[in-house]
Image (cartoon, rainbow, N blue to C red; front, side, top):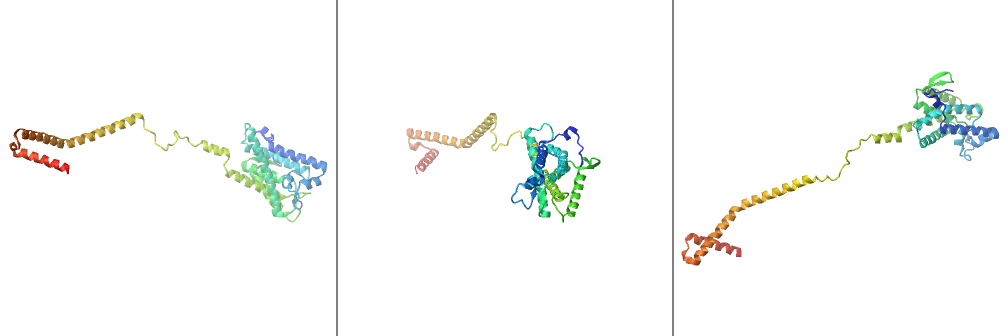
Length: 321
């Protein structure tokens, strides 16, 4: 098929957990097929529209049943070439990732593989409305598509001889599947014999494309953390109530208020002092007039003194009223 050119040879040949489990399940099923017989295993695990109502698990289990050793080895080899790098990328790709991160990436990759296999079933039903399916090709095509969407310019060795970029390889296989699928639309659509479910391959490819596009449009948790980390921290949280001024400032304010009050009182005193003086003078003059009356009698008063006495008499009568 092809070999991806990677920067680290040791990384190329290191199986990741999900890829290892998927290949192991496929090999175990092949051993069971050898012991029990392919027709019986396909009847129980392969997808068939005629028996789907009673065997609801077959849209998933069909991915691990193969018509022979050759298609099994081909699918396992392609999964081995393309799968580990995709899974490592989903684990954020270096050897220091935690076991929890690796486990999450493995579950995501396994779910992605099964999703692509279900896409193959969907396309088989849409375009043929019947038939049977067996083999992991739809899931494998989905993994190849995910690889090409993330590293489109990686150079691969097609058939171990011809160098070709990952994106060109997937587009070429897509075109081939469409042509062959349309050409064989009137024939048997299953995987038995020499027949290949080309539209199932196309379904896996389309499911992978849709998944990768949706994943690219949604921010990851790391991107969210990075955005939050880039928000500048405020030096001081906002306060709904203004802070109290320092004690020295408050003392100065009190002094200002006292000084202003004293100034207002002084103004009032200045404003009222002439009248107070006049009142005091009148009182002294009245005392003098009364003393004179007591000594010499009222006939001794002058006209001015009589006026003072008369004025004070009027004031006293006014208060009584």
